[in-house]
Image 1: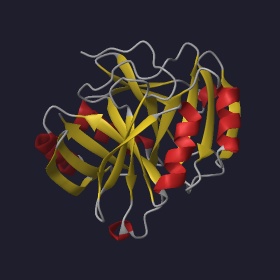
Image 2 (image 1 turned 120 degrees about the vertical axis):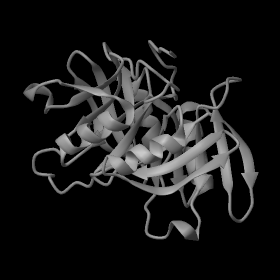
Image 3 (image 1 turned 90 degrees about the vertical axis):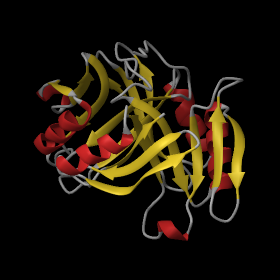
Length: 256
């Protein structure tokens, strides 16, 4: 089991889901990943912690009051130990703060922003909550990438935000990808250029959850009321399936 007690700045550290039908989401992810759930109560807007074998791995919540029509979606958070500095870098790099740095009492601080292409992401400054307690483990976050039609401005924005070392993995008319590392470590995230095949899909961060067997996980997605959007298919890094939960939130499953 790959347990984590913290993350360095720029690492994907947390993902949470806005789910209009919270009960349906819990049934689905319980069947798929074996998650159990802890409601943090009314003071926190009934934000739900998702646990795998007793370890916190993700969050989910209903839409905010007054925003009940918000579509279901997974959001990614990047670690920041200085949220005020991160907010300044968002502004300087051409992004837009949509939720200014705010306290989550007893847990940490967060902001939410748009990059220059419009992809939304969060940043998390840890308190008691230090991010997912499991990483790259069955049923836990294991990778994330931003999908955009504006690769050069987006690469520059995130490089300015966290100093990623960005390496072009492959580039042709169909596939343009950069892998992002912190220092000399292995890549922690990536950027994929969206092609004409992505027509109608806005820029976004895609979250990946690890699975022991992608084909079996894809079958579980279907039987639990979700849909398989693409795959399963083989990649250099594992077998992948892009799936949709019963609320309509898209995410990716990968077995290494």
